[in-house]
Image (cartoon, rainbow, N blue to C red; front, side):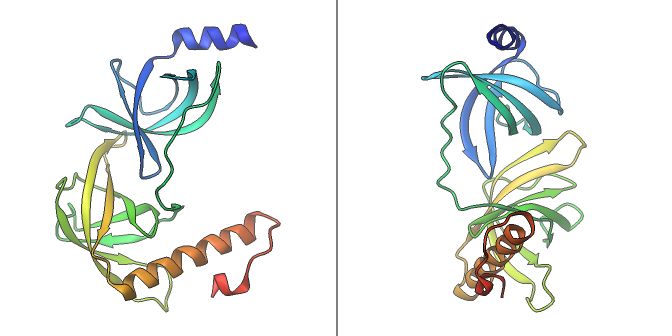
Length: 203
């Protein structure tokens, strides 16, 4: 097992871990990474971490990759990832804005503080733009929001991925998004686990 780990470490490209944001690791690598499942190694203060990752997108402006960790093995300890951000829920919802190429996109996930979306073209980075979020709930109205575009990067299929933060969220909109996220999380928990779910969470 140790021999296999050493062999894998010798072939895996070394990446520099920058930060964890919007459910993805942001890394920099001298070697070009392919948009596929691949092995990389991180150097940390606790040792070397070997990870199987899926490259989600490449940000040419900042020369960074955003990756999703699939599996990891370390020679000593695991990579320390800051997870203070609010819990994110994978969910495909429609968003529209005059600032989105083609005027429409879809979310990859949602939290009470923001969304990660996919669009046909890149968005204006470090700007606030208006956005309409459509929840898949016939009782919930579409929500007009202001969002801050934190980053945008190109995916392997030519689409673009962007991290958006909600700005000056009104109390009613905040309540609606919070209730929606909590409700959908409770439904997922009920469908995929044996845990008891508070019936008030799915109302």
